[in-house]
Image 1 (cartoon, protein in one colour):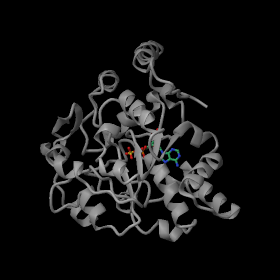
Image 2 (cartoon, helix red, strand yellow):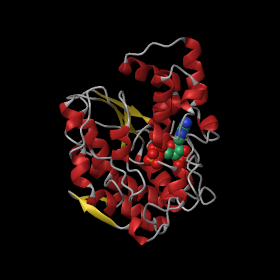
Image 3 (tube, rainbow, N blue to C red):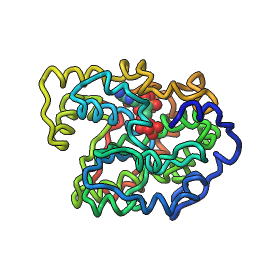
Image 4 (tube, helix red, strand yellow):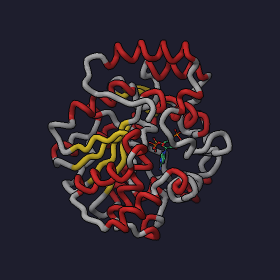
Length: 302
Ligand code: PPS
């Protein structure tokens, strides 16, 4: 995506219009482009990084890029995260490049990003048996991160008050829909497809162990030295200062990091600084109902 073009972008109400695609809230721009997105042609050697918003996507993207480039820092700084890995459903008005345009122009092997729930993933990914890394993060920290992101990112709807946002999140009335259905939907797919299902909290607890899982999944071998380099350069404190990974190259009319930085806290358990005891108890009660049937478990602190 050309940053020059991005700077010329005059944000007005139409970027913030939302509508549903098969019951999932999306931007109107995505919805208007849905036929093309649904019919996107994946290739067998595509790698897809999938997640619910704010689950640790950018972090996983950086780890994968470092692995693919054998720890070559300069290569990993060749472009912004969003240009290195096309975000397939993200649609912008012409002349800006949408995720699909970037993906279609990119030579193989491609690494792509999506926040789509499993049932809305373009079917060619299943048909071509693409490898998929899914990263999940506990609901409360996702909610907090998404709330602050929605305050600073002018291309997603305003979150309203904290109280209103908790209700919207619980009801799945946020972009890309319900967190609960998303994590469960991808969990259900994981045994039928080539999916590595990771957890943000595990990555934070033991990045070496989780990076080794990714290496195995990608069938890559690297030296201990390169592995240590990857752990260091993908740590929160280092990525926070990497302009090719921290979204600060976008104009402030799109992301205003003075409201809340994209690389905000980067740790499990920050929800405790936001939820009151009553809000937390109420959230947990609702959570038990929505997750009761699932074998999926999350840690809300480490
Ligand atoms: S997006 O916009 O959906 O792609 O956002 P995503 O990258 O999924 O999530 C952003 C949150 O991930 C945190 N982050 C990290 N945490 C730990 N280590 C590293 N290296 C890292 N990189 C990004 C980022 O700070 C956001 O979480 P919060 O809780 O808001 O800090």
